[in-house]
Image (cartoon, rainbow, N blue to C red; front, side, top):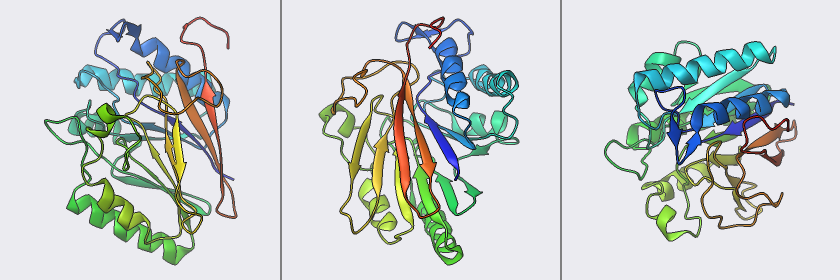
Length: 265
């Protein structure tokens, strides 16, 4: 039973003490990593907006944070998947972290499951785009997974469907409808994970598809929520745990923790 943790939107910057939205991005991300690794995952995904200022040093902070968290938590077996969001420089992300970790577009197989990570970064804009080449790669990966009898989780930064917030929906995934058309062709796809919206959000397609869409809180700061937080903590940083079961079902739960760095929680 693989366990996947989703973290999103850390918005790191070059300076170790740099503040974004009035908060220490680095210290809050390190707290999120500790919280995530406490859950003993097999894979941790950071679903975009990794580096707010898109600097080389910002990605070095990200790399060093992952290494330090692994050492601190004795979690050498965990793997990381990293996705570019609108606040990212995909080439720098791959150059700094791509030799060790999976950087989108990429794939991780674990048991009966395949996790596919996509880059929805679009240069010069806040809205996202998968694009034709990546859509073709995704389709081939889904066909192969189906042939191998694997279930699939797909992760990207931008939500592929409107979430009900006009401001966020205006900067969603431009080719979201095309992406969803591809995913609906394959019954093996069981969950789509995304960030960008800085809040908990979820929806399920009709039971015929057995496909759940899951938005993730930010490790930095929250936006006004569209849906009530199941934990009653809509303004706290958070993440999500997904247990990928052998029968193709996904058991998921939301994580929330204090934004105070020294809080023992």
